[in-house]
Image (cartoon, rainbow, N blue to C red; front, side, top):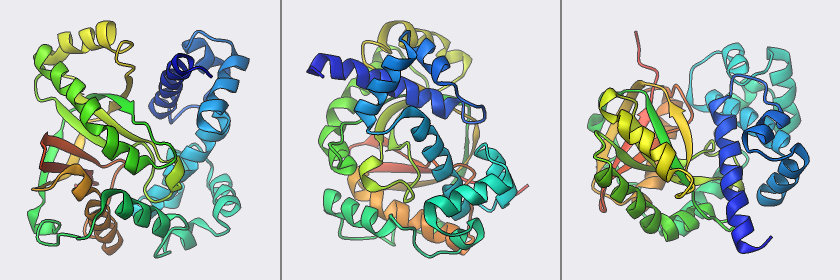
Length: 306
């Protein structure tokens, strides 16, 4: 594909991926996605496979199964509840897990490491030159419980070249600067520039992970005009996909580190505390807010006790 054509289709692929994330509880028709993108089913299928290296249907199936494994690892939802969350019956979920990982859901839940985990952590360490776990920052005593309202995430999937964390580090400044300028221009209230991955760490293999930078904007009356302007004036021009984030409780951890320095110890902190039962995640997607260049605010969606 020519560069301009590839850029066009990379954005279309982002929209298709956002559609899958925003409709995770329904069956997704290839034709419905193609219609949303105003292209034929055959053209969409070909272009998605060309950009992502796998058919759209396989992508949806794979990411829903990986989401289920993420819940097994970091939540205390029952296996039957996890099956339902990921559009499986209990029997079909167990069969899919065994076919993908050659083990049962309960056995997988108790494994110390996922098949891709050590490689992902090592590649992340290399890409970020991470040398420390910063236990003085990453401990439960430093977390604050907070609640965020329902938000819309307007985001770009960052260029990766099969090395997603390295790509994120290389391109973050340019993309985040663009979004930061928008927050000022549109007078947004309580907007956050955030980064993370759309995938499940460390279930998704490293080369397939999709890192993003985005604008997390509360769905409040004060931001109605900003949302309208983003959708009508900037979404296509800036090639932004969008995703709905439900309101919920978070463990917030503020650390005096850049996002690159905070990423690896953040994952180790989350994984360790979920495995020890200090808290459990209610979704698979934690993120880092970027209030200042050398400050990160980590938000971990957690299952608050009633």
